Length: 142
Image 1 (tube, rainbow, N blue to C red):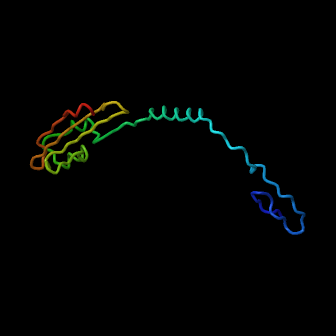
Image 2: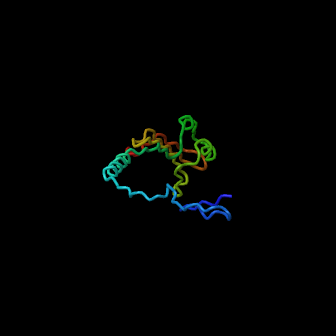
Image 3: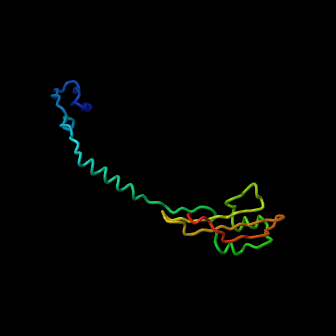
C-alpha cells in the first residue's frame, strides 16, 4: 500500500519497506517573485476606462401599453369595469380625483428620446364614462 501524499514529499512508508528520500515536489519549488510591468497595468486600466463608456442601455417601457384598437373601442357610457377590462388598471389612480383615470405610456430605446408617447384620460360621472381625452401632450424631454 502506498503512503499518503505530503506537500513536502512522501510520508513514512508502511512498515517493512525501505524509506524513500524526502524530496520537494517540483511544483512546490519557490520561484523568483514576478515583477509587475507598469506599462501592462496602464494598458489594462486604459482599456477598462474606454470600455466603460460603451455601456448598453436597454429599451425603457413605462406605463400601460395602449393599442390604438383598444383606445378606439372606448365609448362614452362604459362602466369602470369595462374600461378596466379594455385598457387595464390605470397608471395614475389619483385618490383626490377618483372620477379620473389616466393611462400613460412611453417607450424609450437606448439613450434616445421617447419614440412612442401616449396619454389618455377617462373621466367618469355617476359610474359611467362621461369624457375621453385622447392624445394629450407629454413633456417633450421624455
